[in-house]
Length: 126
Image (cartoon, rainbow, N blue to C red; front, side, top):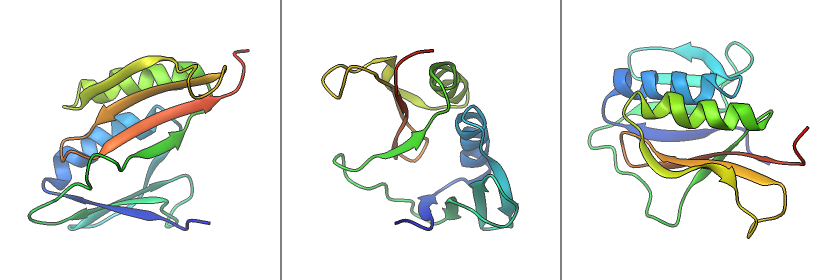
């Protein structure tokens, strides 16, 4: 359904480092960048998430969050750990969330601009 999503950011360099860490842990990378934007995905020129330099960068309200698919539970752990090192705020450490389902393993962060993000895998551990 979705082609890509854009998030406003106040400091493109800081947000780039944050999302390099968070999304790199999930297997995504920068697929383009210029002075006002950084795109993330898996294929050059085909971003799925775009950071757009905006001033001020106003995050969506507390009901909004963006969940990224993780390939495994270890990637969820890396997402959380690595992004915290770059200025992310913990919003739920890695672990099972049985109220979402018996195999729902996720971690939650708030990025430097206040966007709420999640990494999740919803399948039995291997």
